[in-house]
Length: 187
Ligand code: FNR
Image (cartoon, rainbow, N blue to C red; front, side, top):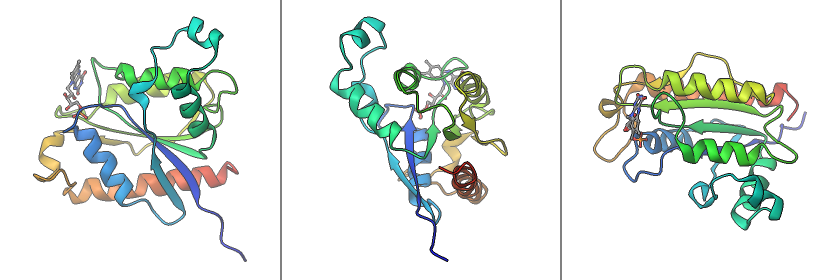
């Protein structure tokens, strides 16, 4: 039997901050993508204009074209995001909204969520809000166990490396389940 081709997964990061805890979490995911899953980070989310149907009607700007192409080429998506006032940061929601236009690759897309916060809940509310948005688009969001990294400051070392063994295991298992969901959906 020939081996299945690896699943191409696109990672979206909801923080633009240089020392972002969620960047550190995404780095941990990038470093331990399992066999059968190739994880690539989407770039240029901050170059997307604020969504505006007038801009769209005039023709997607190059940054939008590039983002939509990356999304359309993905067989799965990993979203790693902070929680801002109980919801997603604007840069992430904006990218999700641009991506939902036209062919809408979010429909049927397997998506895994991860969040990190200095707070105790680890971003539980942003994940709930993202699930609600994705549900409306027919996106296949991976069910729990959730990757909610609370008190995140204590789980990374001075270089930003994830050192917490339990979280490391959770991240690896989540990515493997994303790969398996994508395969099960015939992506
Ligand atoms: C926050 N933060 C936050 N944390 C949380 O757990 N729940 C929340 O609702 C909010 N709200 C919120 C609003 C705004 C505007 C900011 C700037 C911050 C704190 C947030 O989790 C913390 O700053 C993280 O470190 C941000 O993620 P990155 O940038 O470290 O990945």
